[in-house]
Length: 207
Image (cartoon, rainbow, N blue to C red; front, top):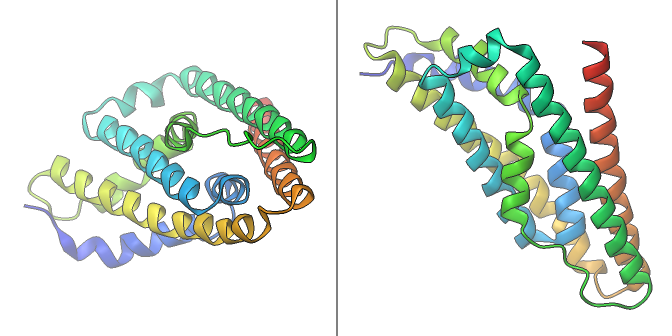
């Protein structure tokens, strides 16, 4: 049996984490601008899938391995920064194709992108390790309680950041007929990817 009395305070904590602009929010903004509303929906479902993997790992007790071996998390962050730089390169190439009048500029695989971006963001598993145990409450089955809490967190992020991506996709839809506008949107997305990769790299160097 789970303890639902902790939900109001737990939801408030999640909103405090999700409300300030962060990597996931910036990534969904970039996806919406680059690929449009449908791409944003696919990407946020991918992010939700990656978050589900981490939530399941914490419930299964695998998160303690990551906590006791911080070098593993550093390796994951390095992979994440490298992947974001690759996305920046692909997006810049798409922007150049748009300027040159090429129509095959969609990079696609938005769901897979979302999964990979989520899996290379170890802050998700750190959030689950730090926050979920604080809201076990009077649950008779801690594993079930953490599963429910993890699912709520995933659902809230999918709804909030998915909405941001879809709203950004409206700009893509309105401007996609213009070669210059399409190129600008892709360059903006490229800048976001580079900024996120740089932020991860700086964080690694400072820790």
